[in-house]
Image (cartoon, rainbow, N blue to C red; front, side, top):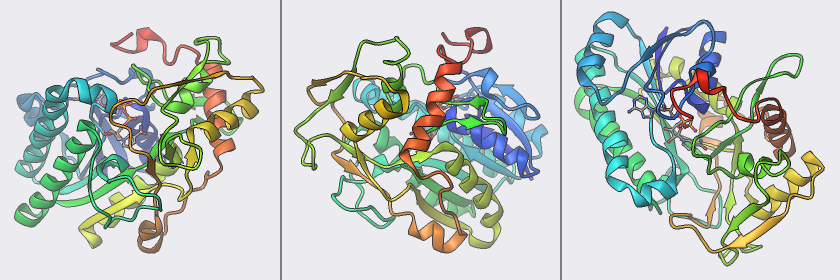
Length: 337
Ligand SMILES: NC(=O)c1ccc[n+]([C@@H]2O[C@H](COP(=O)([O-])OP(=O)(O)OC[C@H]3O[C@@H](n4cnc5c(N)ncnc54)[C@H](O)[C@@H]3O)[C@@H](O)[C@H]2O)c1
């Protein structure tokens, strides 16, 4: 299949683009490089620098592209930022996704894999399954829920076939067969716990901040489900082939095991052999106390199971990546700095 990977210069999109290529698919990446990196795009993928807000450019691309499927990763993803700039998030994530969906349907491309998030759910002190109640704690999660709803209506009214993936916390890096890091996390700004924690032993920050120690959890800090980015990528390869038969799928992607912020920091200390000082600070707006996945549904229906579930292994791969790329991707490979 020819897959258009929208947001394919970003962390999860570039990793998935590489997995699509390895599985024998043709890949075109579309990304505006606002948050992504040209150097992350795998060799073998065509690249179009464009914005899904530009309907005219999308039309030209779809007229020429002959795409069989779209994997849609493009979004602004920072929960905290979304609380300060809600309009920017509604526009970039919701309005621009509608541009993409309308263009797909206009040109007869009816297979979509969409990156949603655990942030659509209300927090729960047990594993979440796909039927649990929605209750986004931040604007970012709300934008993803709105896009999900739009996709479900386009399925019912216009025959769009979809797989919605609700990722929990993506992390880890791709290493080649010799253990050399090839692709990893390099968000700008970075707000994710593991890369931030690893900046301490790299000498890039004096300590890691723990945002909130009074949550209703066993140690007072937020609990999340950390899932390796390669496991997420693998799920997309399964989904794109399953779309014709199943037509409408919604799955959680996580490991089914939660770790508190304190536990992740402790694991990072052990992996890096660094004391990694932590400083307790007040809560950030928009953080739910506990989000942990049940991924039984995709396991039952598509046979997906994480290949890299161990937190220590995930952090070790991330550590290898950050040591070899302490500044992320080189700025000349990116339109951002
Ligand atoms: N990282 C996580 O832990 C996580 C968890 C749950 C869901 N997700 C979802 O997965 C997807 C990918 O996340 P990521 O961590 O790779 O983020 P990322 O920021 O690394 O990648 C997003 C990419 O989309 C591009 N982009 C943004 N707006 C665009 C636009 N209007 N037009 C074209 N390109 C645009 C950016 O330049 C970037 O390359 C997002 O949709 C995010 O909501 C991520």
